[in-house]
Length: 459
Image (cartoon, rainbow, N blue to C red; front, side):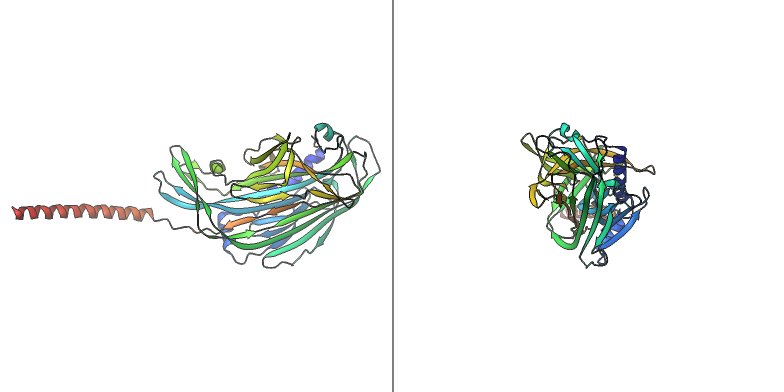
């Protein structure tokens, strides 16, 4: 595996600050404010450009609608940092019926999740592909010649279509980061006057809002039984309107004039993706917490899903975000050119990429090589730590003078507008039951009394 240097650790902390910001700042909604956003007809898509107050200041440009956001974070001329693509969004996943120990519904609420997803563009590494089979062993990875640390580049910024160009339902803007004559880092300890001619990252953001009709909504029933909560799930087959937001963020990577050290070497664009899911607090039922661990068996919480092949065997992976097991993926190959954030109902975020890359005007196959997955507890300062699931990997490009490539993140956020039936007042039910009981008792006495009088008359 590639070894992280102190500079690499700095990149990691800087990039993950954006994720921390999304989960702790005003974009994270409470249940009350979130419902206000959903019901409001005045919700507009806004473009926000602001500096984040961390490590000397990090810039960001993002589109915001309600409690959802998607955008790009990057350094300043005086404080260069890694480039990060991020999104954070909330969804109404299901209705929840809370029952007492007798099985009587005592409350109705909803399962609201918040997902934060970030892709960090860390470095470009030139490695020697000995067998011309991309990365097939750790030996090839260690045969790296030189690299460019993207967190150390002072990019020039160009905005295209940035500003008040929104309509009621959609938005489009473009951000271009470019640099020239970039010095290499020699991984063998030597020195060189060679420089990369030009490196360009272009980001195109498209976001649209509309309304659709859903044919069914999951219903989760929760009931305390003995010392645990019993969870069951069903579907309500009713047509339900849902607000849908469909942002799409493409980024193109253009590498011009790389000075190769070997005719066998290729380039690896290292990307690190991080994801985290939080659920709205649901409190306790009979002293038992209703949390993510309890709701995991509904299969409505998020997983990372992808297809991969190893030793000729294709496997469908569905990795639980709460388990975050460490897996070495260097001997695996991704299939289907994407991985997804999903639950048992649907995929709502896809990080996808084209199967081909344009090198010197010729189309070549591109490989996304997964390297490692696992959990990282992030110490982001201020005594605040968050736990995230990460997947480290990279795009492998064939050797060439001009390389052009265009991956993208696609997101579909669905928020059904739930309608809940009112729960009868239990006090009124108890009073009515008592009245019925007393009335029945008195009526029984009257019936018995009249029957005895009738018997006496007959005698």
